[in-house]
Image 1 (cartoon, rainbow over the protein chains, first blue to last red):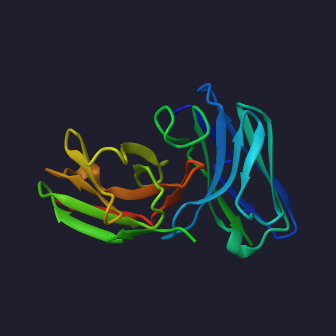
Image 2: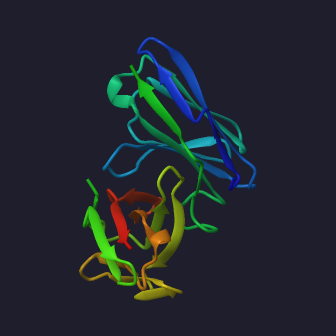
Length: 116
Length: 112
């Protein structure tokens, strides 16, 4: 493990379900991110948290709700998702906000989400 | 909006040969350009990056070149090995808020 742990690794959920993705980092980083990765498409930044405060929300639908209780933990709460939301959801952290600080992003292994 | 174009989408090279992946960006204020490698089923990892005040940077078999005038940058891998097989992503910083715009990725296949 590189220090960013995501659970679960795989998740299948119905469109009416509510579930949460969890991310945890033990690197002492101050910034955490949620990304969506779809096949053959660029990584899409969803949310940015710096020192627990949300600093970026890239027009993400309200069916995705982030939560950052402290600098080490990040959640993504999911409800009433659509099949097109199926993707790999990656969590990342960096020393400070901004990918050019202290060695770039450290990514987790991701949660493979399938919405049925 | 701002974007990063990455080419080719798939690149197949003979083991031992060189591989070059190219990216162009649209935001003239971009000043940081990282490259990430994602092996099959694994997480993306930073392999090299370059800032706008430098034209070229090398790290063993990999190098990145930047042409700010033309707004393009390239990843060069020499003496390719099987473990170089992966998807490579380029990215460019967005203006003043230091977030990244990503390319769509290049799948590099090293043929034995």
